[in-house]
Length: 196
Image (cartoon, rainbow, N blue to C red):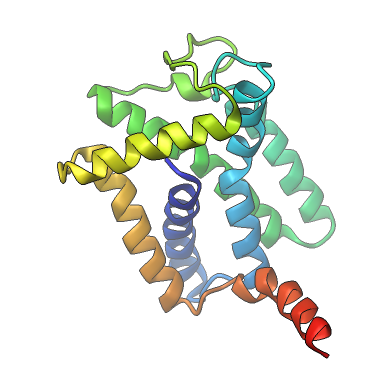
């Protein structure tokens, strides 16, 4: 999954939970924490693998249910101690759903459960081609993704990815775009100072 797909996939699950449990929309801080948790494993593992050759694949320490998930629980526990349990919980949910979002496409494309992306260091990693630098890797994957979309063949993986984007974006808009003002606010204030 792409970062925006991870975020929107997590948002769908989280929003449905918050609506079902509390009859509320997600709050701004939890929405930002959810998005951060949903992209953090890739922000750690992909550069370490592709740019710095620390790992042979972009699914390593941060994707590991043995290391990454306990670390996310520590973040949640620290947030809970600071009376920010909703923010820590949203981060934890985003993080765990990132891992689910990596297992689902691997499983759908193979026709069976494929948990190896999240079982570092005990599982054999899925084979992945040498992607060069981080920028080259992202460019190569985007090119492959665009070519796959242009075939107009809707595979289960493409359906999951596009469904996450369409349904997630629609739900986020319907919820009032939680988190957007927190992310864009500093830029708006800086722009106002420049103009003044």
